[in-house]
Length: 40
Image (cartoon, rainbow, N blue to C red; front, top):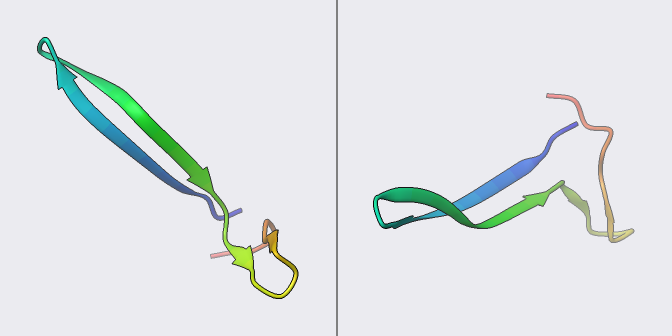
């Protein structure tokens, strides 16, 4: 399954912290549903 992941990091008091994360799969525009059966 193909998955896209984005992390936004911020350095606070010398430590890197994840301030935002997003996970998504490819979208079938016709059905509006995620496509979870793709292979590379």
